[in-house]
Length: 110
Image 1: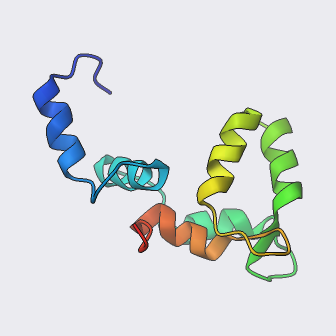
Image 2: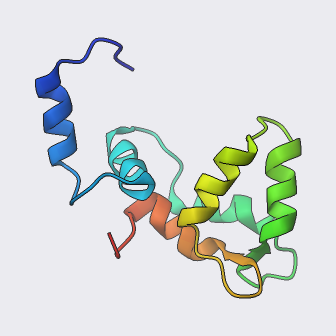
């Protein structure tokens, strides 16, 4: 929420990351600074709307179409950036339970 941030403040923020700051690390750092964010269960419940069979996954192509065409539309570039860090299996399914964990706790691989 700040527009004038000193170099020292930026350096302090970057030191909080474990190594280079990629999208996942950025989300983790950003998430730690937010108050009142949705708990993991709320995010899971939102994804379950796209998973009526209860498989724990959503189809990547169907989800992409929704992101590009509904509500606050994503650009194709934003979708590809997001998919680059999502757990997607060989069948093209997004493991949203793992994704919710990454969003709320960070990626253990980082």
